[in-house]
Picture 1 (spheres, rainbow, N blue to C red):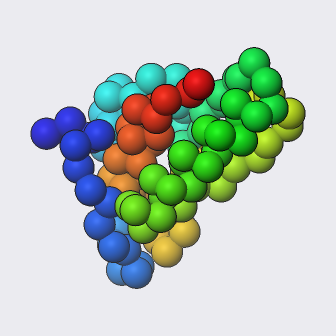
Picture 2 (picture 1 turned 60 degrees about the vertical axis):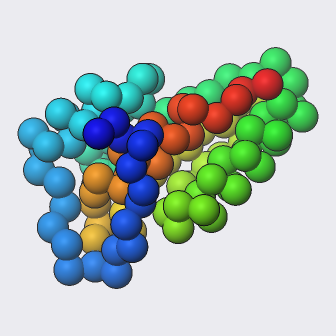
Length: 110
């Protein structure tokens, strides 16, 4: 099953983080995301033509995050949006992070 077809599962901790090999394998299913191994987080930069387009996308992302019960960190700088995804409850990456990233990529950007 593709990542974008999965649902984020509740995580309250006690679950092991993904190994580097597992994370690399899942990363291959995403477009434009990278793993920041120091954090560890998934990160991607989105660029838009206007500030309203940026905020519209952020709102779509927020609605998606609420429906998945998994919330990204993000920073808006006018027409640039930096998104970071990690599973805070386990202090690292889980499959949920990759599922959310795949679903974020499916959101319309205009």
